[in-house]
Figure 1 (tube, rainbow, N blue to C red):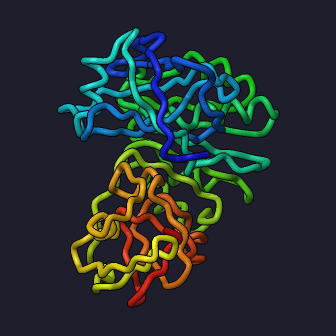
Figure 2: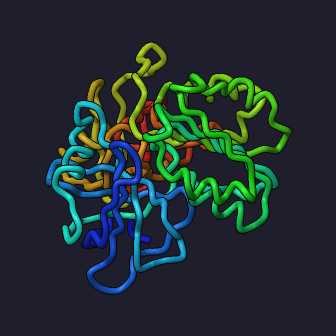
Length: 319
C-alpha cells in the first residue's frame, strides 16, 4: 500500500462519548477505504501545516467507515484537537492518509492491555480481536474520572471474554503498573498506550522481565536525552536517486534531502508515526525514534529519517 496515498472522507457522524472526547465516523466519498488491522492509525491532514495521527478504533472489516476518537487537549495541545473539536462536524470533509500500523497485534496465547485515557483507542480493536479468537486477555484502564473514560459501556460487554479493571484516578489513584506487570506469566504480550508518564513507567518496570513482549505507542515524543546521542556530520547516499548529501549536526536527514530535491514522505517529525521509515542498505543508524523495537534497532536495516542520524561516516539509503 502506498503510505502517501490520500483520500477524501466525509464525517458521517460526530458523537461526544466522554468528557472532552468526541468520536468521528468517516466515510469515503467514492468506493472503499483501505483495509487495516488492529493498532493502525491514519493521518488527518487538517491544514497545509497541521497533520495529526489518530488511531482507528472501529471495525477493521468495515471498509466503508473509519472511526476515530479525539480528545480535546488542555490548552489546545498542538492545535489539532482544538481544530477538530471546534470545526469538524457531520458533513465536514477531510483529507486522510494511511492507514499505517507500527503497533500491530502479534499472535499470542495471552495479552495484557494497559490504557491511559484516550490511549484506549488503539487497544479497543485488539481487545475485540482477542475476544473473537477466545484468547486470554486482561485490561487495566486508567483515566482522570469515569466520565472522562471513553468506551466503558462496550468494555463492560467485552468483559464477558476477559478481565477489565477500570481505575479512575479520582477513586483509585495512579495505575499500579509495577504490580500488574510483575504478576504476568511468561509469554504475555503487553500493549500499552497513553500519556508519557504511563508509558515511561511501563517501560521501566517491564524492561527486564518483559522487554521482548512489550509494545507501546506514543501520541507525542518524550523529552529528548541529548547526552546519549552521537551527533557528528555524516554523508547520506540516496542509491535510487544517485544523489549524495552531507548532513551536518543540528540538521535532520529529511532537511538535508529536501535541499537536494529528494522527497521522502514524513508527517510527525518526532519519530512516532512511522511514515518516514526507510531501508538502510549500508552504515549504522543512530536511532532516535519511538517506533522500532529493540531488536529492529539492533538489526539496523530500517530507520526514521525525521529524527535519527548515523553512527558511521556514511549511510546508504533505499531512496
